Length: 295
Image 1 (cartoon, rainbow, N blue to C red):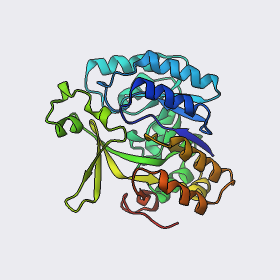
Image 2 (image 1 turned 135 degrees about the vertical axis):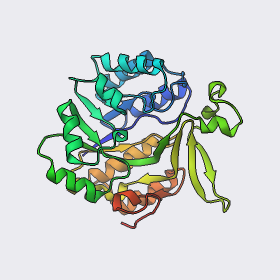
Image 3 (image 1 turned 180 degrees about the vertical axis):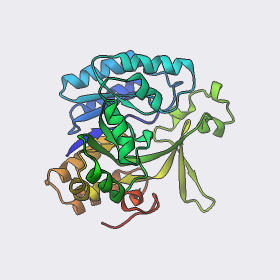
């Protein structure tokens, strides 16, 4: 079982991004996804910058995947998508069907936002070039096991195993709206929230996290305790979504459990202090996503 580092969901400065991937180059993650998947207005890094980082990571032995934007809103977004699809150096993760169309005839990764919940839909994309698929975030172990048992074609399976769950995307920028700013003059306020902007209920309970046009779960999805069940189900890759602090330590703990250097109990005890909020794992167990099911 391999570890993949998902694309950064938040808006960090150029120096912070470069420093982060410099550290990740030395991590146990074998696969790294790069690129802006949330908002095209985020301009600290452009495609040539991502390609430079990709080359550096490749030189360090990482498999690098370029991730596409999830919600395409303008012709400029399509131009960037076409440039990503036209690159000949790195495989691409398609996060919407427009990207799939641009990648016709090429090998690609079917991202989690394509919502592949059945064998026929997965087979359709495999026939179009998908070499790997990322299970939809809401799918549980039972649904995944059914698909893997029924499919009659080879394809790698990846599961989003750690991080705040990206739940929805909108044409509106919620972080800007929080400051009474229009989206077109957002002043890039999301950069002030490197792990997203927490929303709480009137009872002061964590509810949602705002990340520009993206809405995330307030709690942190964590399937560290499910490593053995994922392996038994047939999962090839677990994805860790970057967070502002301690992503390298999260990767270390997952690697230690996967390779039997640490017990699940010890790793779970250590990971709690590294998480920006309490954990949840409900979707994997067929429960509401924000529930925490005991191992």
